[in-house]
Amino acid sequence: MRIRRSPEFKAAYEAGSALLALVRSRQTANLTQKEVAETLHVSQPYIAQIENGTREPGYMLLFRYANAVGATIHVIPEPRPAARPTA
Image 1 (cartoon, rainbow, N blue to C red):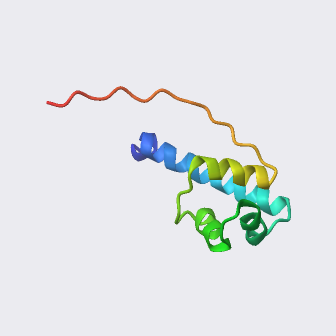
Image 2: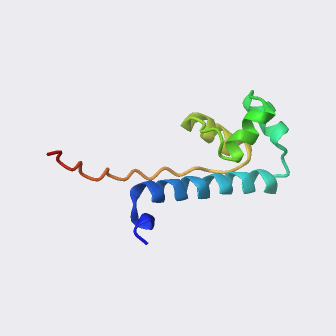
């Protein structure tokens, strides 16, 4: 399928996989959303929205979330594809 090759699909898939890994880390650490929210000084509904993908948190909050649940986030920079010239 062509859509699977698109950078947008790849980015969305990777973001979803990373989010799922963070949620699993929280569950493995036997932490509730409320406990993580209290650690991060945000509300439990905010954590729920992050976990179900209806809210996109900033990078710093994701790093803090990972730290709170005992996980590590690795950032691997990739060059952007060259822009296509417009006619």
